[in-house]
Length: 210
Length: 385
Image (tube, rainbow over the protein chains, first blue to last red):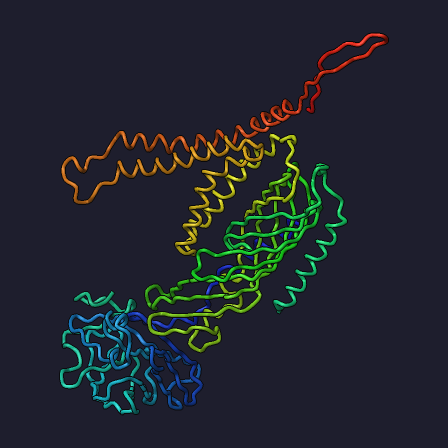
């Protein structure tokens, strides 16, 4: 009997412990494209920072979002995502991905953007989005809601050289949603471009939603 | 947390106690011809065993209830793998017919590599995460229950148990953008995958081992028909079952799966001959094994050659050979027939061996019988049955 009990215990331990299930954080919709990195915090009412760190063969890169005091009510979950695979009707210009030094395996899938959540309410004070990359030139700042049909050019930003090949872009953003950068002077991306809508977006007559 | 040193000490102490107890343990019903040399050489094979996929072990076993040994193993599925080294102690607890049931405790140094891919929900929203855990080396404590068929010279042992790796692994993560390689505490290693018990740390195992006892007097002894049948069945079924478990496990590498298929083929070709080897009928064992091997190999080749045609064939080049298919199917059908034939004729093989040994033991000798004043010559017939 003792041998049988030992065998059952061993079997139970083996079955339950062989492949534990990962415990992910809460799901924060809407989702667009493919998320490659994510960070989130629960707002405390004070100043806070979120960051996405990743590295290539040479150095560390960073996408950082600074929340000023009072930007969100205490208890709100604020999420920062780096998303790729946003489908556009035309154009292969993916300057954000190039600026960040992302691999072709990511940028080749479509437009790259930074997503800020929650979708509502908007922050009470402008947030600062800081991107560290390679190229010291100017960019148009583009914004879209997850269910929008096109990017909107909302300003211009100049890259600040940091020494060597490194540069920094600093954007003041007042709305949640998708943020990216485009080449200046040409409207960033073709006018016909439309981001892939989120699964939760209502269906539109032209089939832009799901 | 129990450290590797503590476990090594415990296992060494356990093995030492077993070895010392083995000296004074009551002998099983063993033939008087068993020599004093208490060493058994074992070949191990199996799935996630304490010595890896394959290995060799030397066991100090006087045939009593306790024994102990050490082994060296290999992981062919892992390139440049560290060889496994292990110590183990065994106890024979219960005898059921010709089979001993018992337990094994082992401590081994192993090399374990585990890959997993996770997709964070909701489906399609996140890039797939590739995770890798490696123990190079891993210090593993194992416990297993065992069934052992112990002949005079050869023994067959099957163990099923669980192993636990005592030390922490190296952790790697990669999702196309981000990666971390080394410490599981690296900030880039996602918290969702910092498991308390990582995949691969607890590993169920099924192993089989064939042992050869050194120095046994090989004078003919009675062969048990039941033992012959049991050996043939186990030597066939265990490699096939274990091989299929490995070959159909999607978590294992292609190389390891190929080893699983090799075990299946080995079980089919060689397994049924275990009974004939036990009875000493090596010619029959080799002949039938060769017939099965040829049938399987030639059958597969004949079938493929008659069915597979080039994609750019034309006209009659595309015709499939019906006689070739029939030949191939006939050979492949003969293989399971030969498997069943040799397994179920193993008891008869044992009876033939006993008859053969009995006849060999007969002696015909001239005899002179004296009764009173007379003497008569004659022949005497003596034998051992």
